[in-house]
Image (tube, rainbow over all chains, first blue to last red):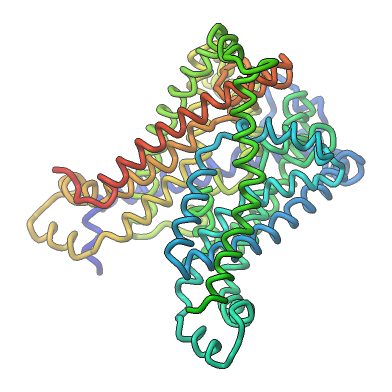
Length: 279
Length: 282
């Protein structure tokens, strides 16, 4: 048995405290989500009751159905998925480029770190407001396809994917590249056929991370897609203007990717959250 | 290696670099220029800004909320990290539950927080059922609303602090604890003289990383209290942009915030270099 236990109190009292803590943490996460679920399946009138009801009296599927039948919702879902996919692909591709340059040269590392730090210091409005003006000029503002927003999300996610991929490329031994080099392969070919396949898992992680970053992103989406909304600003409007059932159903829908990743890929996610804290 | 691979690396830095410059740095620079323009070069936007009491409230809140939130998430994150790394290890369900507030989209968490804290929300319902008076958790211009924002903000990011500190805790060699136990150190003494000093670099890292992010607070106050309930600089800029139609003033406010973040961020980075890797202070 490890002596490390001494760092924590033990005995019957401590075991009890541990159990209470576990219960508090799980309830703290589960209770709010239960309430959201309850609001999503009860008629609107019950959600406005005072005092609020802790258990549903009547159950309806109307709100959950509306998420897929109301045109505005369906359009926002498709738009959010499209934007997140574009962001995932382009941020992963460009992040791989930058991460590789960072792993293979010192000045590349310096350039990469400077870019990462510089963009980290910029507040959202300092970029989004002038960008909105520029997008209006070049016709990327509030497009139904939200292509402008997808570009912004790619730029937001790029430092994160570069930071995730840089150590992965660093771990690939140079000898492998040198062997291919002696066989006459071009640098680009070496990168494509040796480095990229070896970094498959980190590349997948980078894609998932940037997909989720885009799926969750609220500020730029609010300012750049003022009528053709993605899910986060749509949820914001339904929350603020008091459509409880629809907002709750939307919120549940928005949690799906996170829950999938959380349950299926816990280890990936842990690294992901650490990197997410760096964005 | 040779010229060709050097050119490839230059290309690999240039393409993403140009992309980020076009979408982030160039607009930020454009905003800086426009903030000094009012039909010609002028400080007029800043005059308007500094004459607005709401701006000063936003600036004050923008410093108070991050400080409060940082203190709260550090305390909660440390407790959770100690709990989750202690043996016997808690089950995976507990760990998932602890990470959940950060894993779900921020806007979903804020929607939840609104339903919890609104006047006829679940928190007040619980208070009433327990025999207390309901509270105005989100009352505009009220200290309690400031506290609510701090609590919700800390709720969202505590898992990040927790994960950073868990990393630090797991890197402390078990031998050190064994030695302390042999010397007869109790639980508290071990924590005070071993865990805390060795964890110090991780704590500094968490403070720097989260501190800079906390200054950018936007959605928490916007969703919970609206742009004017508990103004911060980002929501102030947003409100100037949308409701007041004062685009240039909004940009000036953003410039002030960027400036504040840069100054505090550089100071924090300096502190990180000094304390982050050094031995812990006695």
